[in-house]
Image (cartoon, rainbow, N blue to C red):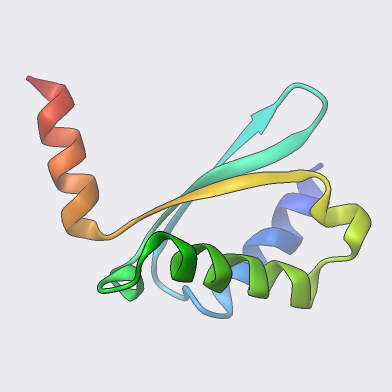
Length: 88
């Protein structure tokens, strides 16, 4: 699983070089995570989703992509507001 996680990270870093990418694992060795990037600023849900999955499609095999559940995307401002709302 570590090899697949590294491959996913390498694919995502092609677009999100300095951004915060967090990985989580589900039972059965499936990967999901969170990406926090200002590159999502001004993009709707669909555009953000396409940005992420275009990278994964370009760098992972269909079998490897089946092991990736999803990535939740936030801008830095969105994650700050989310964290503040739930930390009180």
